[in-house]
Image (cartoon, rainbow, N blue to C red):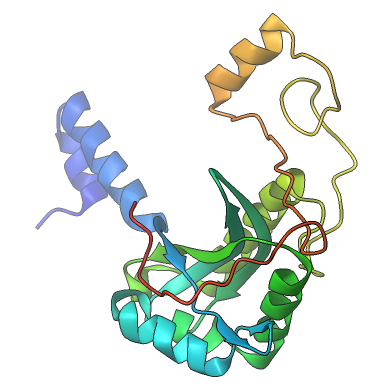
Length: 218
């Protein structure tokens, strides 16, 4: 049996290109977006907590993602907008790493200081054996930088250092209307403009208590 390389040498240009493309896809870690899922909130004496029991309830209702690996984004949804507040990674499984004690403290601080429905987006590798630890870490760094561009108040400590460069009208380039060239370049490179979303503070309005855990409709 011929290897892909030998087959490509004896194939037509189209067949050779297809063989190379298939080989490249096999070597690439592909992540998929799953969610948003609403996060259960425990309410008592006008206080609002996200506890380990809330985490267990979350994965009981969303068991299909419990053992996947990848990254996740904890966010608050208010009206028609959603603001990211924390980006994490799960190199073992989501069920083991999303609701640890350290993460719960971050989530509680977030829902205490801000108003909104807590939700989780999972950026998951459907094939557990097809993704490497360093690929998940690189994905986390990428997501943190994008979340930071939208919300400078994200709760991440690692990887939060602000970029010291930007492209005017394209990415991290300050205020002002983008030029026609910048708009065309965005389209060329598939770069969406970052639009910061202002999330109301808890002190400014009444806190929304989220008791339901049914995943939001996509």
